[in-house]
Length: 357
Image 1: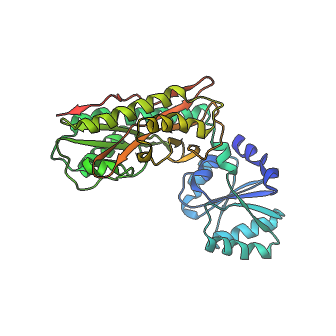
Image 2: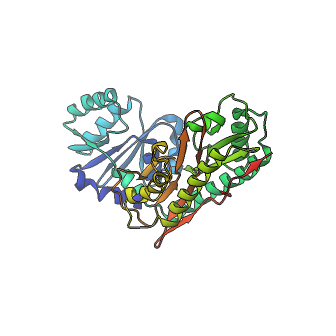
Image 3: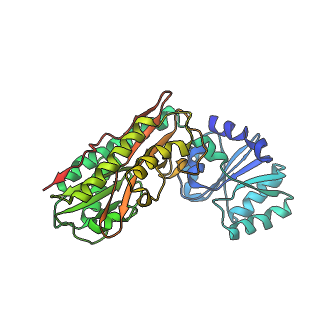
C-alpha cells in the first residue's frame, strides 16, 4: 500500500479528498488488480476496489489492503453510494481517461451524493515516472526477450517473405520465450514503407536492396520493452547507407549523453541537433524518446516541449530517425535506465548496419 500512501500525499496539490481511478494501468499500479473491469476509490483513510462477480476471487487475491465491492448496479451508481457513505465532497477523476459521456453519468449520480467531481491530470502518472527495483527488473527481462527476438529474426528474415510473416514470427518467438504478447502492433516496414515512422506490418514482400525497420517489444508481467533496429536486405544504395550512419551516430550521442538533471528537451537536442547539422533535420519529425513501463508510451517525454527533469530510476527510449518519402527511412532505438551519473542501456542488440543476403 506504499503507492497508495504516496498518492494520498498528492491529494492536497489537487484540492481533493478522494481519487477515482479508472485507468487500467493506474489501477494495476496502485492495487495489483489485473482484471479487465473495475475502478478504485481511494480516500485519505479507505481504499476500495469496485468490480464485478467475475473477479471476486481474483480481486481478493491481488488487491491486498483493498475493500472489494461487487457492484450490481452500474459502476457510477455504486461509486455514488460509496461517496455518500465515505462523506466524499471533492472527488478527483482522471480526466484524460474519462469520456464526456461517462463524466456526465458520474456527475449526475454524484450530485445526489453532494459530491463534486474535480478533474485531475497526472497524479498517478507522476508516481509512475520513477520505477522501483522490482519494476526495473521486469523491464530488463522484457528487454532481454526483445534482444533474443532480434537475434532470432535476423536469421529468419529473407527476400520473398512478407512484412506480416516477419511480424508474426517476432510475436510467436516472444510469446514462446515468456512474453504475454508484443508491447504494441509490431512495425515491419521495408523499402519505401520504411519512410513511415509507424509502418505496421503489411502484406508487402521484402525485396533485395531494401532497408527494413523492425520496431517491437515484449509485454512481460505487465510491463513493456521497446526496441528498433533497421537492417539491409542485400546491398543498399549509398544514400541509404549515409542516412543509416547519421542516425547511428545521433543515437550513440543520445545514449552517451543522456543523464539525470537534464530536461526532456535537452535530451532531445542531443540527437536532433546532430541530425540537423548533417542536413536531415526536416526528416526527423518525432521526439527522441518517451518513457516506458506499464504503458509503452508514458512519461517522461524526450521532446522539444518537455521541461521534465530526468531523474535516476526513470526508464526511457532513445530513438532518433530519418524518413524520406519515396526512398526509405532508418530508426534505431534502445531502452535506457537513468542512473545517478548517466544511463544504462537495457537493450543490447547490435546497432551497426547488418546486411542480410
